[in-house]
Each structure stands twice: as structure tokens, then as C-alpha cells.
Length: 112
Image 1 (cartoon, helix red, strand yellow):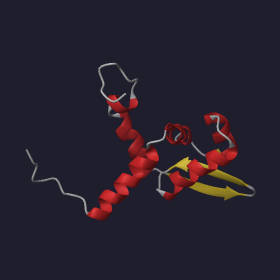
Image 2: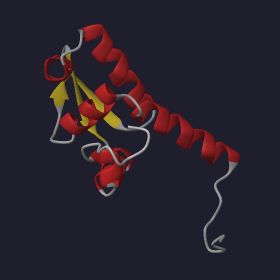
Image 3: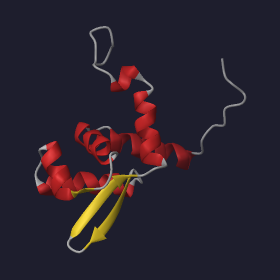
Image 4: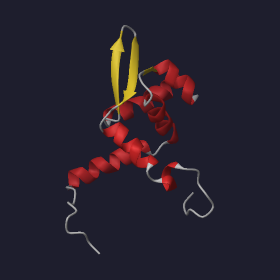
């Protein structure tokens, strides 16, 4: 049954949502988001946390920044990243509200 009160997104809105979900669809990016949710972190500390090369970590951070999931700030030669309070934090909260997505996969859940 269709809810008449739900506003259908525009084609551009759907495209943006699809890109956002695609960017969030990588485990390393989710790990980065959760890590920088606790406050600003440097690329080096993020790299050490996720266990990836500096180049790979920077590529993931670039995508997260371009989609508005993280903010970045330069101080001298260091760049600091943190989750955005609006979009990034909202997306993490949505994942946490759905244990089928954020929790430990079980044998009963299809597709895992």
C-alpha cells in the first residue's frame, strides 16, 4: 500500500542517494566514518586504525569528503578529518537503528 504522505524524491535526489549509498558500501569507509565520529583524526591515525596504505586511505577519505560525509581541515602539513554532524552522523545513526545492517550477520539473514 502506498503512503500518500511520503514525498517521492526527484531523479537528482535518487541519484545523489545512490552515490551516497555506494560510497558507504565499502567496509573500510564505514570503519573510517565510525573512527572519525569520535573527533578529528589525521590521515596517519586513520590509516593506522584501518590498516590500509596511505594512498588507499586518502582515496577513501576523498570519496567520503566529496559526498559530504566528512569534513576536513588543514593545519600546517596535516589534514584532519571528522564526520559531518548533519549527513555523516545521520547515516551512521540510521545504520545503528537497523540491526540487520549494523549488527552481526546471522544465518537467517539473506544476502549475508
